[in-house]
Length: 177
Image (cartoon, rainbow, N blue to C red):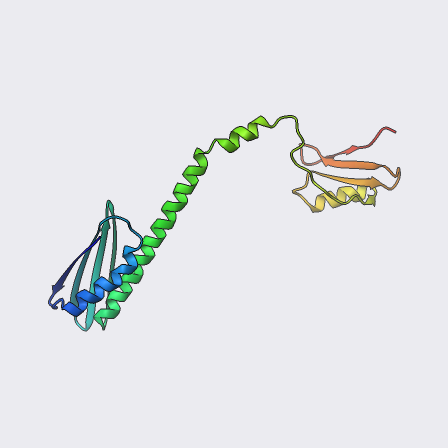
């Protein structure tokens, strides 16, 4: 339920303004289940019509203050600002809840720990004929790759060239036969 209090300073809060605020507050109300307390203060300073809105829900408070030559336009701006704040907060809260629920899940972890001594990933790649030097150059082009498999042009056998842990030197894996 939404409870709206409208106060006018140097301006009378007319029924038309009250009805307008109530109608516009429906955009904000849809984000909440419980009670929503809304305080609206309207006033004029020079030629500006200022609308100040505060929405309190449980422990959270959202606030917007805008000015415009037209009071209704100022109220519209406030509603836009409040709705943006609330949507941002809701998104952040939903994301946090989702992460918490994912962190709390142990099913995936326990299943992952149960898999042992199995091939769980397969990578497919082309094996092209080249010399070990060409393979080294090809591997240097892709710093993220740790190895390259190729057909050695000199022996016509599959070889693997790999980076050593020092990341400066290479190892060559060749079949014995």
